[in-house]
Amino acid sequence: MSTPIVYDCDPGNDDALAVLAAVGHPRLDLLAVTTVAGHLVAEHTARNAAIALAAAGSAVPVSRGSALPLVRDQVLAGILDLEQGLDRVREDLPAVALDPRHSVDLIIDTVRARPGAVLVATGPLTNVATALRKHPAVADDLARIITLSGAWGLGGKTAAAEFNVWCDPEAAAVVYAAPVPVTVLPTEASGGVPVDEDLVSRVARLPGPAAALAVELLKSLRGTHRSNILGPTPVPLNDPCAVLYAADPALGELVRVRADVELAGRHTYGRTVIDLGGRSPEPPNVDVVIRLDAAAVRDALVDSLRRLAP
Ligand SMILES: [Ca+2]
Image 1: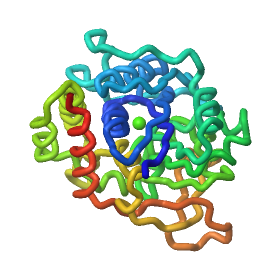
Image 2 (image 1 turned 90 degrees about the vertical axis):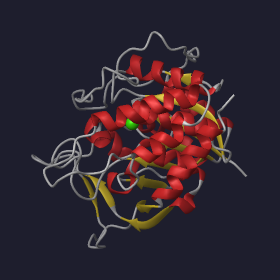
Image 3 (image 1 turned 45 degrees about the horizontal axis):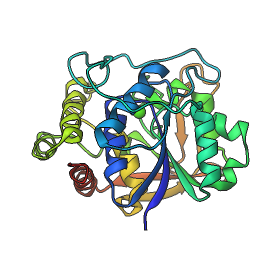
């Protein structure tokens, strides 16, 4: 049985890789791809998603979404790869046509037409929060939201905040509190799945345009990775982990805990306060992935990409 998903993303090299995996995975039924500003501006993330779908040979609807966060000023990625991948505008690569609907409406229409769908989000949560606010009944039709966001420890974008939450903390707060089962996949879990030379060479042996794009994306992830002061850290696969986990929840280990987004902190705006110690008097509200099976996730990625071969 395959899981129907709507994939909301901000490609972004790892998001584009996740689009390829979502099309190729035998246990996913990809219904639509929606995009949001985050890693890049909205026009660019939409086009990149359309490029990934063209490479994967998919005709699912894809659209452009929210250009600005709900409340805060806009944040975009600071580290870009201008040599390879999709950080620069790639006029040389074919793209499918965009659906004319705003991504918020594409999410609502798709989920209403397919009750039981899972919404997987690997960008800022602006579209997801706006869909829940614009059409609250969408919560009844969603089986689950899986969001790659947050961290229980160090932030990735500020000392306190992970990038996807930092870009739109208020939207993340709406989603974490939504009346839908929510799974949070924080950076500690996705960071445990490395993009190493072995993974790149396994994908490089696959034929076809999707694998060729995937190799470029993987190399770009390796090229733009920055370790912190504590020493070298592996290059994290990140976004594809969320899609692959949606396909096969046995890939991860879950705990049910309280998680809140800091919206008022002077130095900690955007921090996800994830109560792994069970100290909060508030009831648990999310499931947090605390560990992924790194070898199995990477095998699933390679297998999904292999299935895209012409
Ligand atoms: Ca992303």
